[in-house]
Image (cartoon, rainbow, N blue to C red; front, side, top):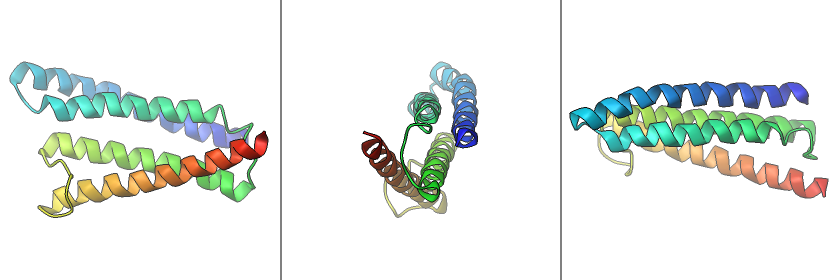
Length: 136
């Protein structure tokens, strides 16, 4: 189970690095009048996602779930977070926000990355809640 916690923390740090590096483009967008809102989302939202994975890694040893459910929780959270990061980066680079299912192929890709990321994260949080409740 400790190795699973390391996976969460490792990916959390990678996500945090991506979001911190995106701060460079955030500052550039502010200076040039570019798409600073989208880059702010990558910078702040990505930081939150990375910190969330790191925080969840500390909970892995105390949750009470079958091995398959613990593994599912870990990978749903990792994949869901990366889908959010990828969608935010594409949105910031292209200007496609992904708020509707229609539009360009890029817009639809961003939309569905957000949608699947949200579903993975919600299911993962549900598993975490069950594991914590069972630990009571």
